[in-house]
Length: 212
Image (cartoon, rainbow, N blue to C red; front, top):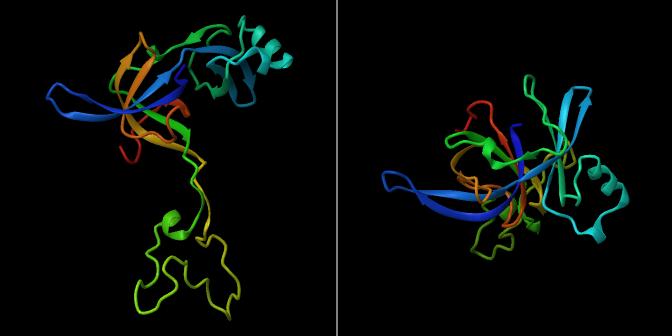
């Protein structure tokens, strides 16, 4: 298994052997019970759970689903990961821990970015804005929308004000700096998408990314 579910705890720093400070994100990764292993059209997939759901918030269908794996309580979150060719599938009821990662490995982490609400083009896309003097009233407006003769419409894909953030984002090329097996903590160099206590998925990266 090359993936795990976790929770972003925040950022801190650690020091290497030379005394240099390394900015890291601390992730509470696992333990994740294996809820289901199924065969699909494109290969096998493993469903992992994370956390604990309150009994009053657990449906009978979910209780029966996790009960097949021998779990007494339903996980708070379920995620499914595809198995690569040659990987050995775990058994339902097994537990995936942070031990699957090693120091120095490259991982890619997926999370939901912070929601910023409805924003203008200056904050959303970094537009420069209009003149700030000489009686200008278009300080933060997007400007011209396009020619009035041809095509006489706003072209698709035009950067305009709208909803910002609250989207799924994957950051690749992150390096594992430290693995704390006793406390189920994973220290990853750099920033991870999402707020504190946000749910993330951590997957091993097959090779180097284009950025790292």
